[in-house]
Length: 327
Image 1 (cartoon, helix red, strand yellow):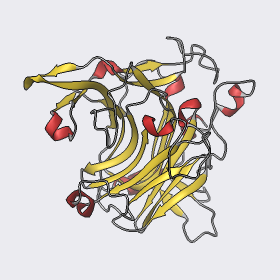
Image 2 (cartoon, helix red, strand yellow):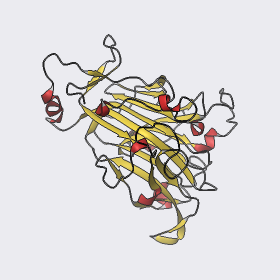
Image 3 (spheres, helix red, strand yellow):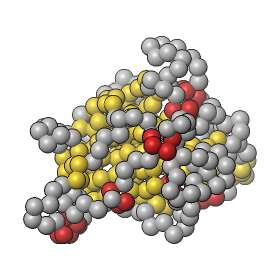
């Protein structure tokens, strides 16, 4: 632990920032979410109208499945259920009737939300392997309301071989970087011409391996990263109120966004989430720093500059990333 706080960026950088709180989840070695006090699996239904698609959404707890590596000392290998290890978030192919209108269909999906809702500014990082099945949206985001969001969203249909009008080679994928604001809500939330939105090319396909995606949320800007490389900086409509961190995997059949529903069950797999942030609650930061002794230093949060990949000959090395809680 770091009683004196957590810092990002170099000490001589004008963008250096220090945070008092930490949220670290090693999903490669998490076998049970029911005893987890950090994340809350979500159960809710959304009608097609509210979901803004031909289908609604059904977030189901059973679609969030821990799949840890069997040996707690390993950082590579299959999960105990087979396949890629980590926290599985599923979107199901088989639709179910909407509880409010049996003539309408909803898509079974998954979401987990941080128990803490006092998160105000910080650095937020996820290592994830997205799905190769077209027709879903994998999302990592800060959320207060539909008009107060910081989103990194991966549309699996955009990771397919050809995306006309984009310069990346067929080997690359894409991520949608979005700041939702009252202004974006007025125009339907996604405006490609807005400074709050960017369809960002990636030099790799997110569905082919684990990569770290990150956003640094500061009062004057939001910076987005992939494997430690800056993708975009947004300075307009930066949220200024506290909220929670969400991970979700969903589809509503909307051809303009998620597409789908997927032709078969689709999964995104999360190996870790690391967040270092401040609290909006008076006194919490001061209490966190209460054990900071004279002469102790702030912990520098390391930049993840390579893919935290678990497979291959080097998987045990590249998949083993640092958690301050383990130090």
